[in-house]
Figure 1 (cartoon, helix red, strand yellow):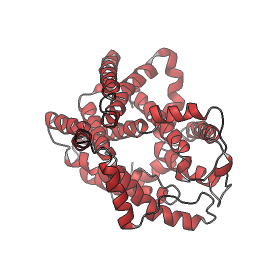
Figure 2 (cartoon, rainbow, N blue to C red; figure 1 turned 120 degrees about the horizontal axis):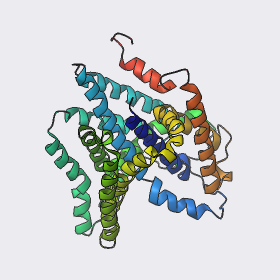
Figure 3 (cartoon, rainbow, N blue to C red; figure 1 turned 180 degrees about the vertical axis):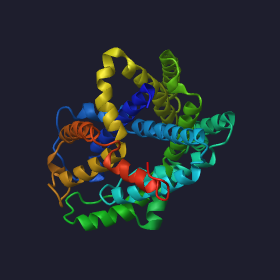
Length: 367
């Protein structure tokens, strides 16, 4: 594994932290009628809105597309068509997502597993065509139409209609005493709500666009070139980000997606460049460790916090302020870093990653 890929693992670790803090701000979707306020809650509210909410998931989507390319490219170098095996890998990822959904309502693994078939279908599409498709996803034509037609809340109305039609209930009592009842609710209402949200919030197009952008970055060997090239890409992303901030003065809802995309286009190459600097290389080993165990950490952090917050566990949801619950999340992340560093001293993969790899290779010679 090259040093450049180590930096990408580190970026993945930072994205995982962002997703964890986004979940923590939303109280891991276990809602409560009251929780004590704290003086620094407003700071976390701002950070959640400006940094964690959508941007971390888009970084994950970009890295998903990049990882897909790297796996396929590695297989092609060996003369192997990895697409059928990758499709099976996506089926397994969906299974991990279903297991995860039993504990956490806002799972993204099932969504990534389904949308992950799109890069497989487009694997041999020329880069120019792939770039056009990526641009169309980022342009969000439907969102632009609704903004220009004066109906920016149109998809919200569609979401409400879908919830009414399928009889979906959004709120689950945070003091639910039964793990089984909570899990069954998550597997029905929870998964359905996740898909309704992704489809009606325009997020689906941004995720697919990031998948394709990750593939394009892999084809261009962006993270295998001269490090200063990353700075040029970050500067281009910063310009895109600045334009989106100006555009929000005229089309606030539509340009919000451009802001999120611009932040990612600026943040990923900038973070990769900074992490390669001699002064920051001490951060690489711990971040790389948790970045290599992302699936394990993503699943376990939500399971642990479910038992911390809910009535079938400690039931602390109504007693923790936003500041407190996000501080708990940071402590959990640091503990996961220590666990991953220790685990990888004796293992090549994280626990869930090893299981995923083993099941993926069923029927193939074992390494």
